[in-house]
Amino acid sequence: MTSDQVLHDETDRSDEFAQTQRSRRNVTKYLVRYGALSAIVLTFAVFSVLSPDAFFTTLTMKSILRDCVPLLVVALGITCVLVQNQFDLSVGGLTSLCATIVIVLLSTSYVGMPYQLAIVATLVIGALLGLANGLLVAYAGMNAFIITIASGTIFTGFGLFIVDSQSVYTGIDPGYVEIANGTLFGLSNQVYIGAAVLIIVNVLLRGTYVGRYMYAVGGNPEAARLTGLRVRALQASGFAAVGLGAAIGAILLTSLAGAGNPNTGAGLFLPAYAAAFLGSSIYRIGLFTPIGTALGAVYLQIVGTGLTILNLSGDLVIIIQGSILAGAVAISRLVQLERR
Image (cartoon, rainbow, N blue to C red; front, side, top):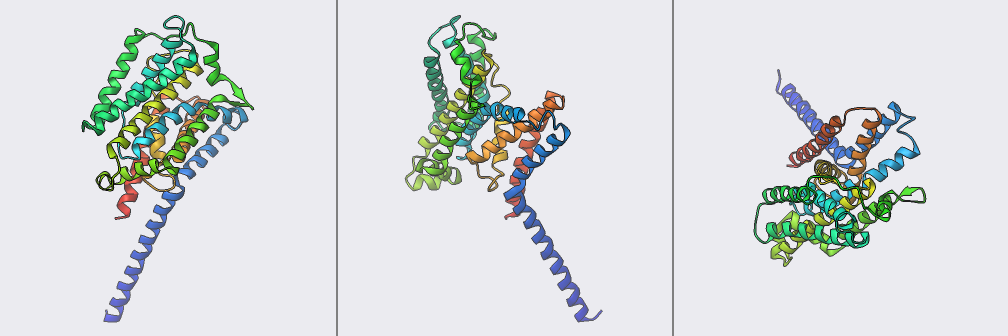
């Protein structure tokens, strides 16, 4: 083989390698920009084909929007800590406790205060309990994973203790039930509440200095501190937002059910994080945004509703939710490695 032939072969291999690298980059760009949105559209299309008479209907679409709101609100609260590269694993227990508190306060079988006051009190309590987690993490230097796992267990225990592990469904004001079950212009009140919370959180995180500072803390807390940002106060406020989101979610769930159960939030933890991480694969991998979280919550509700219509096991829904969370994290990691 002549030197010209060797040089030609080397050039061909180099071109093939460059083409392979370009193809991989193109796949990565597609995953970053369109992967999650494509999954939502594809899943919707599959369920529409499999069950067009039951799934692809106006009633089902309205139900999906209504039923995803409690999950959406809780996930938006979690987003406020995720943007700061923190985690709050107490959200399930805190939601359960808030569900118990609001029903106990308004039920005439217990405290019997006006439901409006019970709602305000629950929102304040939820925010304060979330803030307590934040203070322990930001100011006391405790590990967020450990302390929020512990506090979540405590919250769950308190909820069970208050009502002796029993559901409360008596003495509930019909006005409270109407909050989630009422409709306006053909849509559930929950849809409007969810939209309002989404707008507020999106404006806070994406349109204010506070939100930009939170993202800065998540990017590099030490650099943020050196620029004069109150890093610990911002971190604590993120945990307070988790508590507030858990309280709103608890109010919506108990209003919709017309009853309170001390295990109300047990099933929200995994879906809420799955929604947030799935949403982080929209726009730009690893960037948590309120709009992305909202799309993630809608997607999970589409999956849950579709599987229910197909009469598949509820356990399968949990498996798929976990798989979605694992997949979103795996894609994020894959893209990070590709960028190195």
